[in-house]
Amino acid sequence: MVAALRQWGETYAGEPEGPVMDIRHDECGAPVRVVVECTAGHAALPPSEVTARPGPAARPRA
View 1 (cartoon, one colour):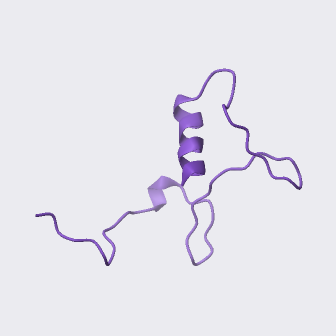
View 2 (cartoon, rainbow, N blue to C red; view 1 turned 120 degrees about the horizontal axis):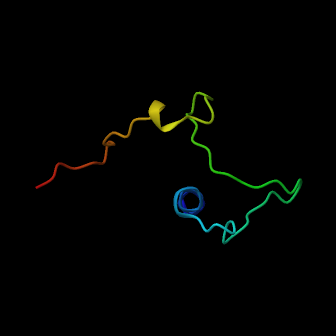
View 3 (cartoon, rainbow, N blue to C red; view 1 turned 180 degrees about the vertical axis):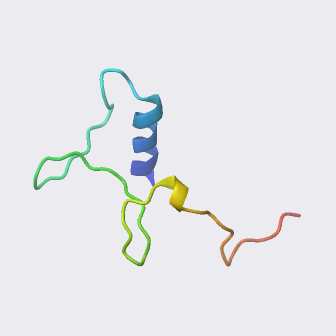
C-alpha cells in the first residue's frame, strides 16, 4: 500500500528533480512499480477496467 501511494505521489505531485525515494529490483537494478492485476491472471489493469464495490464485511451507513 505504501509503495502504491508513493508511486501515485511521484506520478501526480512529484519533484522536478525526480523521486524522493528510488526503489529498485535487487537482481537487475530496474525501478519497481505497483501493478493492479486480477486473480484470473489479467495483469496491468488500467483504472477504466477496475470497479470498487462494497465487500462482504461492508456495513450500511447509519
